[in-house]
Amino acid sequence: MSANPTIEQSLVNTQLNAAILLRNDWQLDEVKALYALPFNDLLFKAQTIHRENFDPNEVQVSSLLSIKTGSCSEDCGYCPQSARYDSDLTPEALLPIDEVIKSAKLAQDQGASRFCMGAAWRSPKDKDIERVVEMVQGVKALGMETCVTLGMLSDKQTKALKEGGLDYYNHNLDTSEDYYSEVITTRTYQDRLDTLARVRDSGINVCCGGIVGMGESDDDRANLLIELANLPKHPESVPINMLVQVEGTPLSDIESLDSLVFIRTIAVARILMPKSRVRLSAGRNEMSDEMQALCFFSGANSIFYGDKLLTTDNPMTNHDLALFERLGIRSGGSSYA
Ligand code: SAM
Ligand code: DTB
Ligand code: SF4
Image (cartoon, rainbow, N blue to C red):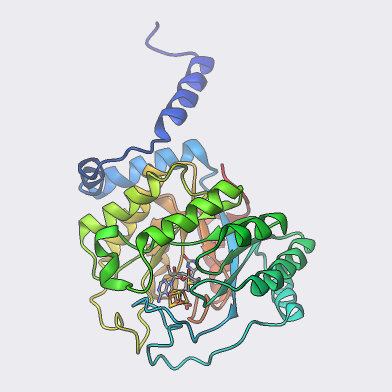
């Protein structure tokens, strides 16, 4: 073979590489070695893989709405919606459908392509699922993609959501299996894996990621990414949240994570899951524009857009639009690469 491959040969090689790169057998020492690369080498590697799989100047935009707020029975140490913590939040019952559709329309007018609805439940009741299915259908009728995050699901509920036309289900692993019990005691890691398996097997796209900056170790961050990448199929969407430290929650005073470690986490997620949308998720309000730019360079290609996440603040939409303009980023691109 000649030293300079033809365009056709390069194309075949790229396709072969792309196939080889979708691995589900990552080991801790390999991932630690990626994390330990010189920063520029790690970001170059992540950006190279990103370009092989996505338009590097396009970022998908989702909007969030809390459709049922607070009074949650669970003890997730990061969450202002747990009834166990005094977080100065006004609880709200499940919203009326017309109010949800109105918010979705507003988000669409502002440029969001996916509408994500979150509920502070351990797991929904069957009658809640009926209401959520009506919301999903109303939002889809606007021409938007839909995502919901409702807690643990039964087989019957998963089937009802799939038949109702739901596009994505968000259910996070949150952290490594080892660190998990330091943060949550009211449901297990296996409970989460079980719900993820139901969602995946039903054919609904999986949105699954975690939170960093909760006091976890370097190994915990690497192990979280390994758990995600070694699932039977890479989640179509991988939200990486930086902990939003909310007063009243057990994690409110935890030491903040080094920004460069956060950026490395995005880069490693991109390398491990080359075809997944990596979402620069909660925590952007506390990030500089430059830090977000480095996250996009490292392979993040989705954000939550709109002034509010579920209960906490997100950057103002006009600030995000200006940032996209300054970076030459276009919003768009909906699904899995
Ligand atoms: N109650 C459902 C559940 O926990 O599965 C769905 C809603 S819950 C708020 C969705 C996700 O939001 C959590 O799994 C967690 O990853 C993220 N989250 C909640 N509070 C957060 C915080 N303070 N900072 C960053 N992410 C947070
Ligand atoms: C995800 O990974 N992050 C979003 C979404 N999935 C549902 C939630 C972030 C919540 C941040 C805290 C709040 O606003 O209550
Ligand atoms: Fe409840 Fe979900 Fe918050 Fe946990 S993360 S306390 S389950 S709303």
